Image 1 (tube, rainbow, N blue to C red):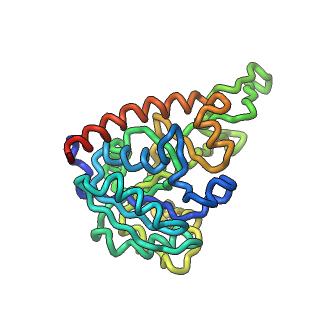
Image 2: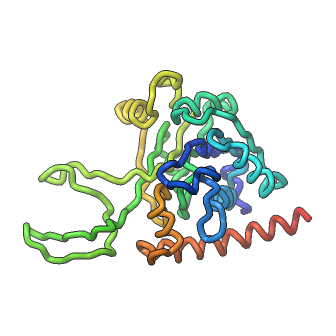
Length: 274
């Protein structure tokens, strides 16, 4: 918590969607407040960022946004942080949400854009250093994935193995393996100047309309996450990360270990406040 590298950097945590694919649970709760191992997803997100040195936060709110604001204020308002809440509408696209909050970001600043429904535990500072070193306007991150259906492994057109545990680091996109595909983790560093390439009010989907422009202008780079990552999108995902059934790649166990380390920070800070 002593690291000051990110003191002047902002995190924009997207938490305005309806989360309808989680079913009835989001009829009464916004998705970021759904609990995993007895803590809201957003509890992990905020403390993980705080642990890595973030002290400036923007929450573009939407569906049941008042509940998110109440939670953050109750749990973290006394921390040494700047926190902004902006009502960006219930059904607004990410580009529209960004348009409504960019005035809060300092000119030419870098900010970390992420969803409020993803568990992650990796070296965010290392990703930021790559972003700065490459002078990028956009740094995308990727993760290895484990298929719930198993992996058929071939060598020289002959099956040599079958596994339900191996992670896929990338995909071959052509027979010569010239192009590799990586799974986007949805954790992104952006420089505010990147937003000048488009009109956020009319472009539609941010990823489809802004990212290719930055890539074609050679202002983007790629960070491969080494650590834990899990997106909570459906009830099945929620069951997996809560270890019901046993989690893929033991993700439930990994989250419990992360929870223990974050609880130490949380308890220490709350004692100091008292």
